[in-house]
Length: 475
Image (cartoon, rainbow, N blue to C red; front, side):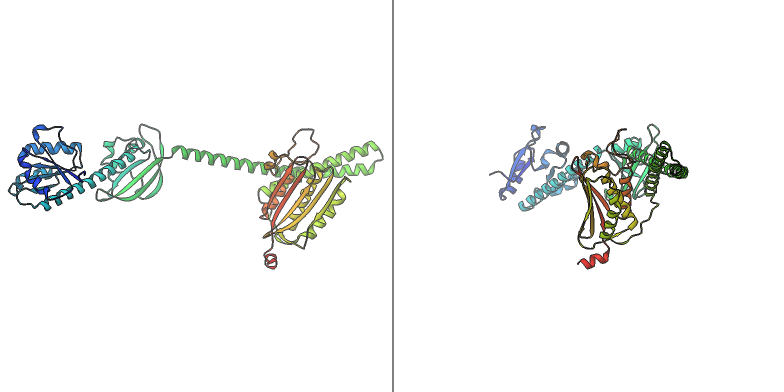
């Protein structure tokens, strides 16, 4: 059976080891070995505790103690002496020995107890030293700077990262007063300008700690120069984009107003020419001018409305609206405008649903969606339907037209965007109709979705809230 504890007694002769053998002869679980000074160095066994017997002399004991602590700093080392020699041997305690054993008066149980206590203390010290080494290794290798500062603001500890970030040698950091712009509580951003390197922005954090039994501050700092510069560049880029957007909106709004006035004259005089001439060619020319002017006026009105929506210059008048009645009126109004007999326009829904919306907004939304569907549907059907879904009502405008590619759907509501952009595209338009639709829906706290497949048509689904009293009645 292997002993639990191994004790190495260093004595001048084997006879000087008898006192310890006698002590352990009545105790199980310990193994005692003896090493003689003349067989050292290199003959000290790997033991749990070392006992320096007085027979080897103080000078030899002092040298052996130094050798043991050099190789194993946390070793349990005791001194075996007679009680009368305590005064001359207590220097070894100050040099690192843990305790004294009195050969001439200690009982075996007392000797074993002191050795066991010394072993326990040595193991605790060893574990503490290992933890400290691991912690120091981590602190010395992390990229964040670390300072320990006492309550008077004097640096007590600094890691190599602090040396680099503050551009100061470690021997200069130790004992110096911490710069006044580095906070000792909370966190802040500090700009430093080292003499031998570029200026840096440091993110500094400070916490209260205890260091070597004293109240102190733990100050950590990280180089965030690149992050701050990128953030500033993004801020400037965002500001420039906002200014450009505002300039664009202002330009479009001003140009729209400037163009509408002369267009009204052009359209009016074209209509007068068309009505006042009998010349078929002149009448055709006048009609072309009138149609083109109306088309341009529609474009300008769309641009102006999109600009107003973008600047949030339109406030909705939210109120309960009878949805089925409104949809039927819009469909009845648009029915005569369908110039293709191969396309049918209808509405489908049940009940008398109420929706919380701006009635004018909702009419414009339906006009745009149905008109857009009619533009791209050469045959088949356009159906407007509604359905109650918990706290919202869904309005679907579905057609059997040409549909859209999957890749284009994420951009369908972008302004001035159309799936076909070629000069010879079959359908004219500004690409603002659906942008305006989404803007109006957003103002009413609703949402719009689209599904489509080339050759099979599209479906635009509008979700709008239901008045609270309608929710209560539906329960």
